[in-house]
Length: 417
Ligand code: STR
Image (cartoon, rainbow, N blue to C red; front, side, top):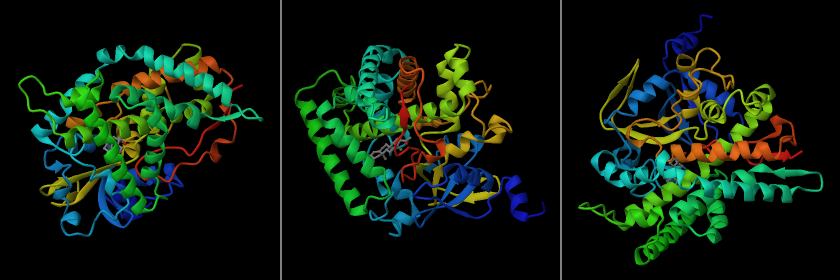
């Protein structure tokens, strides 16, 4: 074909603006359009222009480039007042001071304790708790079977499990889990009016600040208490910083793992040959987890970094002050990284571990090991308990939530068998 766009796309150059659909009606189509639009794609986020990185190699470079920063004050559209708190995605960026929003030496200071608490070795200690939560929720699934035998695997299993785990780690009482689940659902949904979203964020701030004050008065053995206590000889985190980290941990730990567990179950049910390989012990559950992370990433787009100088990427230049997202779902489908069959789910693929779904560089997901432990416990336990598990509706009827940055289903109705 002699279409200049197709040629430009093959050369990795950008071909137009892609409006990210707030209703997420065709996630696979959008992912492919982004990948095919070039290394850097121009996107429109509810009327706000930005770049997004769609390829593995370039994302790897940009994620360690100090000229890209998280500080919203480096954003031209924010400085000029074009973007304000009225923009529905503002809460993804202007989220308070925390390890998620700060770079450089200050970032290391904000993040060290959290990453130390979440190493694979430290996580071994909470494995029995995660197993216990999993067993309890499997019982709950059994009990929640409707008249017709269907049950929502999301509501009863995939959603409460990560909340219990992150709640235990951070010291958030069980009695608050339903409230947090409800608030985050409304926070992420593009159907929530912006004034309601801002109000719920303010409520969450009050909730977390109260929690931090309580832990300051009566420290326990959770990570929130650890964040409050100063490092030996170090500068303690401020209350705002502890609150910011706590918010980031609960939001991220809760939301992303739901997607990981459900996307893995969905992929296995849609590929029974591969499910067989795992159940027969020919391929490990870790392969399922990694291939799901690559093929159907829980985070679709990560918002946002800002250029403090002009940055050339291939044929394009990100201008000083422009915003850059990272489109992890497109990156997982990169042909250069994963071969011409990158769009296929294949747990035996040699590159399955070479994905970038947890990011790269200083901000690489501090909860990566935790999510692997959670999914690595939940998935085998689910299929061991319900070997006849299957979808209660045709796969095409599963709809995505209207969430622009996360890849999450509205519900996942199953028959337990
Ligand atoms: C949600 C709102 C909030 O109070 C704090 C944060 C900071 C961490 C963010 C989180 C946000 C949204 C989901 C994110 C998470 C970090 C990882 C997670 C972006 C903005 C991912 O989807 C990877």
